[in-house]
Length: 424
Ligand code: GDP
Image 1 (cartoon, rainbow, N blue to C red):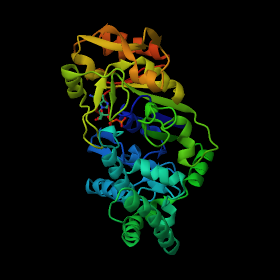
Image 2 (cartoon, rainbow, N blue to C red):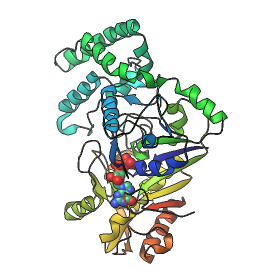
Image 3 (cartoon, rainbow, N blue to C red):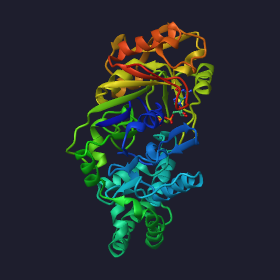
Image 4 (tube, protein in one colour):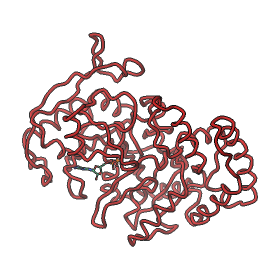
């Protein structure tokens, strides 16, 4: 069985906890895109963990975790994540972690280029996380990336680094007027962190093909959400990779395979990190209260997230482009304080109503049309069955399900591993 767990909105939907929950039935968890520009938070009996690069199944000893070719990997950052896990007594070996030899390495100069570009843009910036993601994906597509497998061939690696650094210096020195980078330093950085990762680097595609032939369960875990997809998201305020389920098998290394199930993760309200159109955005005290209740601060950067009401227009579109078969609705407990809960059912611009998610200037200028539902005003974090929930909460779930036209099969009511309701 091949299952993908993907974000339906702007990211931070709570995918990490869903992967952690559902990975108990999996043999393999694969991350197939992105780098250390977002974070998954998982809380379980061993403590609180934030993963920027490692797949969330890493906390389960019997699960193999794969970092696919669609990823861009800052190897220094990855070594730090491994150190942190090992310091907490979690053993990582070449058996439970495998890194694609085709994944591209995010280099120190990619981070520099990201920082220089945001500096240059000043107030016109896109809100980059400054982790080098756009520059490394740009280099991948202009064929100036260095892949994990190259670590094993030092002479060839040295030559590639020399050639590529020469090119990067044209931009760094010539374009941004910053200090040149030294190819020897880059080469030693690659050896220092690359050598530590060698036991994990392999051709994960062949490995996965064999597992599929043996009917193993594979879960594909995405970072961010549909609205951050490079093609279908709120371009240019997107990430630089595909966050869609359709990319899962490509980014994992098994492009000839088809998924069996796609689970979309949606939050009971909206949040959005960084710049770009966010139609349902709340302001002032209303926003502060929701941000505080939902603890909406970036896992990778600590930045306060923009927050707003549930957006049915964006979510319906997210379900469509993800091809979601079912939905996990997270953080329902956060709304318990609200007397009335706003739900955005359509967008409006110049007297025209939009129910299909628009793009470009229509999206930038649209205003939300709200309906209001009665709140439940009680603690739902102890509920484990649909029947335990107050009637108003059940009505909220049904209303959302009807608006998005996709079945809600899980509802989470707290960050803990057992704080969820299974509606099947
Ligand atoms: P992801 O990147 O999609 O995994 O999302 P994040 O990890 O950035 O955000 C999820 C955050 O919400 C984490 O801090 C989780 O511990 C927390 N969380 C997840 N589910 C729930 C829930 O049902 N209720 C509450 N209150 N917090 C939750």
